[in-house]
Length: 387
Ligand SMILES: *Cc1c(COP(=O)(O)O)cnc(C)c1O
Image (cartoon, protein in one colour):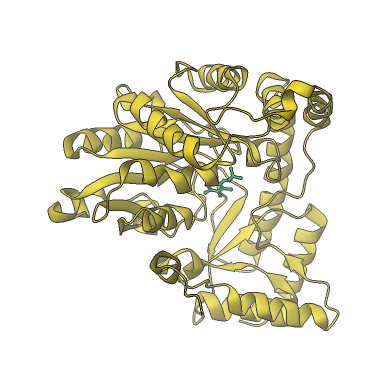
């Protein structure tokens, strides 16, 4: 009787349907499945953050509607954190907005700046929300392939002139999900110059800036001089503080861009629960040792997995950031064949690279969201397979 709107009908097919079905089938047989598919840390939120939430819950003033821009104290904490971490100065009243998770902000942002027929430049393989937000705003997605020969950075010079003349937003995400690639400040500076030349908004998804290893430290795009004229950056507490379930994040940068997003939010939501914002303040202003501890845990897991895969002959590099490993499937397999084989013959879930976009074909993504023992077990199971 009712049919879905055209925008829902245009949603891309969910590529993991078959994998989910196979996983349920394997689990039904009683197999102890090792799930390396989901990008949700297995570790609990640090206790000082949880305690701050408990205290905040007892304050009646937190039981009312929050403001959709976020409490000023939260925006101030976010601005101070940006200053301490990246040396970026921000006005908490005008250049910071609280988000109900960065997915919310990323999905809503195009509603503020994209008109039907406008083009949005979206990397592929990628987090699906850049395209879906574009689709919901009536925009047209132009995909920028992230290829290994370009270190998984988009090749800006290859974007056709007629696309650029209609383009409004350029999305980036570094450190990157799913490729675990990183971008340096020089690349960001090129992007900012390119955006100014072509009148583009730069929207940078910075969800993984705090999960870095060895001697690498990811920059913010706002560290580039003049970036604030064209850029907005999306930060999230989800991965940094193991707070995926809390739904709290913030966007920072150009005042007009932040105001546009805030206007959309004024009209669709009433902001993040103040108890959650108070917990987030505790996270951003408290001892950052917990973040260093998380980095250490993920680094050890990364080493177990990458060294294990290398010994088995896989083509894989140790990522400098994120909790993902992006590796090539063995010769003669597609991403889907390989993921199906690991699941059926070894009870291991990995994500086929093409599920994030066609240039991901030939790769698989492992999420380091189980402990070292389970990763060792996964390597042992893979070693018994024939490819
Ligand atoms: C996890 C993730 C996010 C956001 O998560 P929220 O929980 O909505 O803040 C954003 N971008 C990428 C690429 C992610 O992997």
